[in-house]
Image (cartoon, rainbow over all chains, first blue to last red; front, side, top):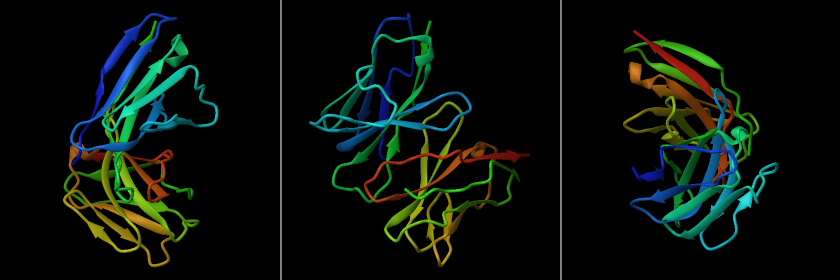
Length: 117
Length: 109
């Protein structure tokens, strides 16, 4: 199956700093990528939908100025957590769907565990 | 997206078939049924999806009732590595995936 890679797998940062997470589709072009957040023992919560070359669409309650999403190419989307605080500590997961194949599965990255201290 | 209902947890003996039910009584005609699973601390893994016909692949089988209001994911010979949270999701092609609580499947030896 298609491969989606996230980097880094885990990161620890100090409160107040910003952290960038990369999501790459390795063997296909992804017009659309999705960003999720997952707290312990909870399900995945969709944060935003990222479309190549346009602004991301954020779900209700997600601060767009805090979670900056950039989807500059068909194989790369980035999520930047700005001015991170301990409550932002979570498991962040991206997924990507192959361009022009909307009636197919989305593939997920391995996730990035963010710990803000 | 239509809401799905799954049992919170299930146990299955190793080597036996695991049958995971999903109720989606409000599914509309153009919504597909997708199944994903998530093993602890990993990203979700695609399993299978279907519209109205039963589907089978190397991982599992998907049985969708004729009225499409429910479906069952079948893992024919469950192994310990199949222990995971299984998510049943319905969505229109091209739309975002919205995850519910899923079913925790515990495969026991």
